[in-house]
Image (cartoon, rainbow, N blue to C red; front, side, top):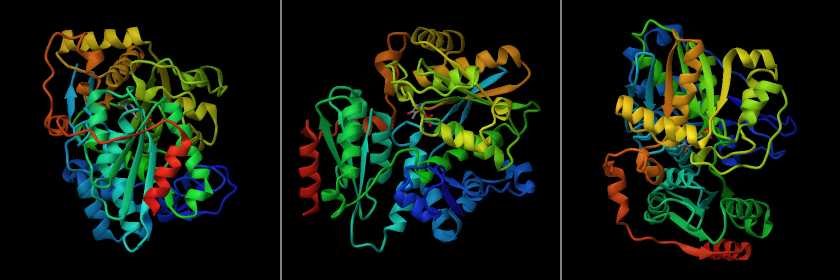
Length: 433
Ligand SMILES: *Cc1c(COP(=O)(O)O)cnc(C)c1O
């Protein structure tokens, strides 16, 4: 499989190069030149295949011959070592729980898959690769856990001091091994700016191979197709049309769903559900894409003012507005509406949702008002325990700590404090020597 840059001003590359580079020289995102539907026999009989077999069929064309089949199968098996259940909520909708992985966020799948691909591509290199990543919470934990123990790869995570939850901080600072945490005296934007500066700093990149691990990387983006296959497998006995409501921030997950549809899944509609960072709902209403600075909300993984993957969605629709409207609806919700949805899910259905899942539920509900006969799956992207400070005051029940969290909660915190770019630079340079 060949990938091209969406800015169309850089050479085409293989999966291997796209993963190692992350982004093309012209700063464009990589996109596959071809998308082939799967064998209809497989699509018709999903319930006769295991998750690993389905995932292999879905991803193999995108990997091409850059990873041998037995190794790709192994990578998939290691990536998918947990469940993806759908919990029925009403007879019209259910919650697809994507949070049963090691860090209890759906980003585990993409991070684990990418880490193993990179580990394979770098297996014979004497030179270590450093994954440098800024996080506002969830991404860093998933990346740290995904890359833990991967040979020849070191991970350096920058996080804003006192702005991630206690559990998230443990997930970043408690692992050790090849994972390093830098606690930045500043905001997430400061962390992000330092990371960007490091990538442009030749005094670092001359000596050190740096790569990023965010969702623009094809190895983090594409494995998210699996969720939609697993859900369609589980729902194969339901004689209804099926739509998905996806809580969206950078729009990588929902775009992967659209890719899964191109592979042949009969998905009726995608609903992008988001918070007050509503650049996409506004685009759907007006046809004008007008990014704006991000606004802080209680569903903070979606506080994105200019979603990086939306350009991939537009590419899938050849930039045609009508075509996009056929496939996508987009709704925004406020923090008050989000809290009310958490309360409603708890009181009416005894279901505990996190703020992101609650927004996806609201998206499903709104869509069902006009399409009552379509079964709508909403994606629950994080375990509620990760957003305890928001969820706990709304529901009157103790949330039990899952084993993944218990395992990390008492680990000693190891982090180096920094406040300026020069400190990051000398840290990375000392790591080199
Ligand atoms: C990252 C994240 C999202 C948004 O996913 P995108 O692929 O960026 O749209 C939603 N919910 C949670 C909990 C997340 O961590």
